Length: 221
Ligand code: DHB
Ligand code: MG
View 1: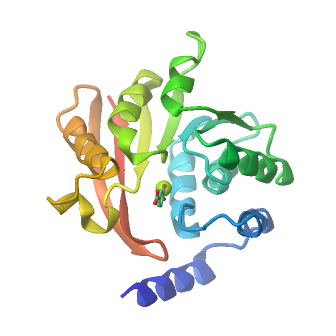
View 2 (view 1 turned 120 degrees about the horizontal axis):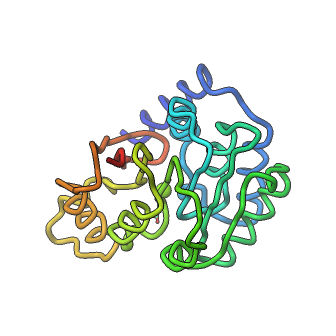
C-alpha cells in the first residue's frame, strides 16, 4: 500500500500544491546535510496547517519541535507581515540546521528559533507573553501530555492546537508496545477526553508519503 499512498500524494501535490523554491531548497539542504526526510510533514499536510492558520487569521504561532524548519516555513507562509512564530527545537544539531534553513529562506524576521527542551522554554517565557493563536505540537511524543497542558497555558479562547503523529501506524492500539513515545500519545488522548479547557477536539488518520499516521486537533475553550 505504501507505494500507492506515495503515488497519490505525488498526484495531489502535482495538481494542488504550488512548488515553492524556498521549500524545495529547504528539503534539499536538509538532505545534503544527511538528515532523513521522514520527520518533516508532507507538502499537502503543510498546506493543511497553512490553511488552518489562514482560516482563523492567526498571527502568533508556537511550534514545538522544529527539526529542519520545513513545517515552520509552511506556518510562516500563512502569516501576515506582522505575524510571529516561536519555534522550539530540543536538539542543537537540528536547531543549527533549522537556523541555516530559516536564514536561507530570509524568514528570520518572523521566525524566532529557541533551542532547548520545549517544556523548559515555554515555562521560561516572560509572564507577559501574549497568548498564541495557533500551536503545532511536533516534538518528542513521550512528552505530548505535558506539551498539551503547557500549550493550554499559553492559549486564549479559540486557540487551535494541532498535534502531529498521533497514530504511528496503529501502534497506539498495540497493547504490547510500551515505548514511552507510544504511551505518551495514549496519555494525550486520555488527557484530551473531557478536558475542561478544550471546547472540541478530534483526531484524523492519514496515509500518504509519510506512511500511516495522523493529527489530533483541539480548539481551546
Ligand atoms: C517522527 C517524528 C515526527 O514528528 C514525524 O512527523 C515523523 C516521525 C519520529 O520520531 O519517528
Ligand atoms: Mg511530526
